[in-house]
Image (cartoon, one colour):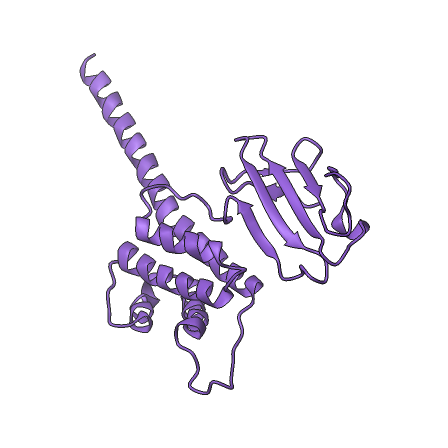
Length: 229
């Protein structure tokens, strides 16, 4: 089984008896809850009402994560996070609150409403550009255009791609019979790019400023020691 990434502290850990359990309740099976560690869902009997409840315990921070996913014919559309209510990364306070809120909400509804999630990611992108780069125009298209010479060509292309994908949810097609769909996997990929932008722009800038400040302070301290000799 693949390692699990903790939504609380971002650490990754293997799924073993001490960190992972799952239970498969259903109407057809009336036996008491049985913990079945380390057994793939595909190897277990599926009934029409069955769901997979997965429990994870992070060995680093002791955070508990619980997910529910339907595996029966009557529950196949169920796929949600119970604890925490989304897999949103907990970004530090120096990332603006409005950006953190939009990002967290996009994560929370990624399975419930992928189009709405993509729309929130689009709004999050616009807030990122306005706050971090200080670019404010009438439209997101104009803001991304002005950003063209300030980021790499690869990043600029993906910013335009995010804008286009977010537009699907924000601006429905004039022809109501023509529907462009965004599934949860699509919306999740969009969220992953937003996460990456927050890390590259805010987190890395903060780390750089902190390191520069520490080195400058160290230099000043050494100069002070020399002058006192």
